[in-house]
Length: 398
Image (cartoon, rainbow, N blue to C red; front, side):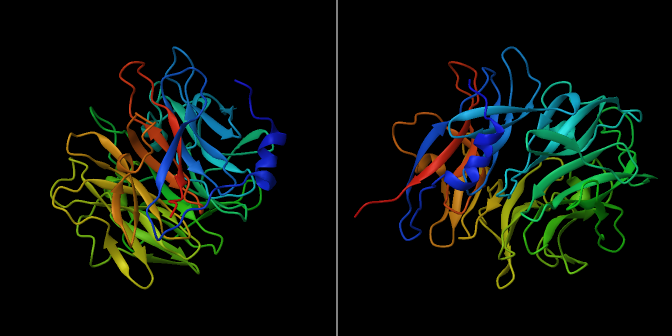
């Protein structure tokens, strides 16, 4: 495949024209498989309003994941920070071609922790230090920590700020610690905002009594969202005791009085209105991992998108039209991507796709302001391939 040049990525900022979609009528979606490098695991996790898509891909015969960008039908491997794996794991809301993600380095993980990054890699996921990165102008640079080994970069805005979490040097007694079947997490980690200047990092406050947390997304108003709780595994669970919003230097528990489980309460995205979407833990069982997609707005408070007793869903992104995407567990136990708005409720994207696409849409991970969705297909049983996809709305004709 012809790689994306820096010039092409920059051109995406001025020349791409995205289709519009009418909210009054639910559109159908044209599904496009994005180009890949010949590997079996490919996924689109982010799409901006210029159509720049980012996520990960694998190479033939390998399971190591590399952060990947797509634009104008071309694909580019963004590389790593010296280790085997990298990934753009979160929706990155940035117009300027700046991409945030995570990457292993060549340095060994001295404490033996299974850091947050390991959940987003498939092979060789542990044993190496992992850091957040920013990729721009053809170059990947590592983001700093708070003194510890590891860090994570998630969302980004147009002001040069990136959200994430980073280890301190402090050993936290609420960490899960070493042992069979455990993550081995030892050090405290805190929610942070990186930037806007190079190597700048600022820790965000936690809910009183909490010891660790993470920031997942940020808008251009400087509002950030994330989690606050105990150290635990560094991949959520009890670290996500509280779903929080940071603004004007304060932390607000947006799930207080509504979210009843003290685990897995995680905001995933925030739009410029300050609307927040994510997933809430189910109080029935912390180990089952059942979650419920939610939306929080200033005027409406916290609301679950589907109150069904068997609902198991995750909201991943929201645009300025308050269109929400995510995924849920279907009746047959497989994952299906969904789209939601207040008029139509939650709809399975597989019921809205154009008939020429015969695959299953497993994940809807991000949606831009034109309603274009980035995600991935289910595994093709004939080829064993999971494809990165975009779903483009087709405006109904009258």
